Length: 309
Image (cartoon, rainbow, N blue to C red; front, side, top):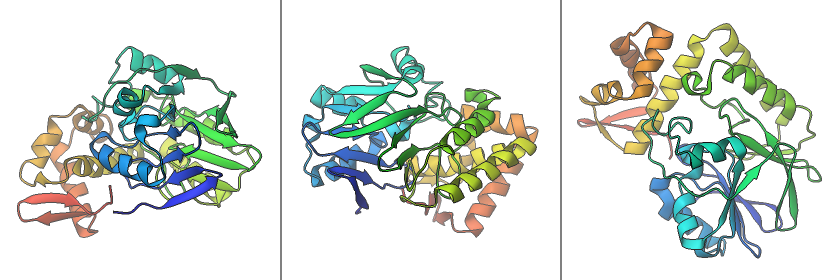
């Protein structure tokens, strides 16, 4: 599978992945730098993509981390082991990793595969970080993730928005991990981004886009919807994480999938919190909708998703 590559600045490439793997960036100058590293199970593909741009992961000098969710840090530990690279991340995320808090990073909560690594530099809101000759401002944007950051290139009016701003959707809000203020924090983060003059956005998932104001307005409407109807948060968690779980596993036995979800922290707690513990009813409702829309397919005795990883 080929993945779109866009040179957004001299020798700095935006790599568009799918839904399982977050988008990431490769600076192929001397020394090479990465921003985020995808999901751990797809590290071989990530390595190939980086190599196509002329960078050997053994030569990577540093990795910049937008937040510590599994789809953004999957390659960190193994690349660091091979290259001895520095790893930069927000101070909150650094605390999560150094104390091996796999709950705050969502890994344990969502039953995800990830590895701890060795942070070397803490990033602060307003700090300027250099990627080769290119200077980016670090902006702390909590909400989706307590340690979430975006990177802003002021001269080129370019925003690397990670999971804080997508073009037509918003990222999952895990209130049971991030706290009841998570949605409010996202709204504040979006208001902070609205002050930036931006002509190109490179998000954490999906293609790069130029309709910055439109994306902000759509995200704000979704957040306002969350604030007026909290069940929208719960439905979003269930739909997105069920699809994500199917992608992580590639296929699951149709007659066992519900039982597997019951054994996770996130599934039962989400339905307890938002839907009065109606486990079977909500599962049936969501899966029937997915099958009807061809988001999930049944192949014999197995379920799989049509969403690209």
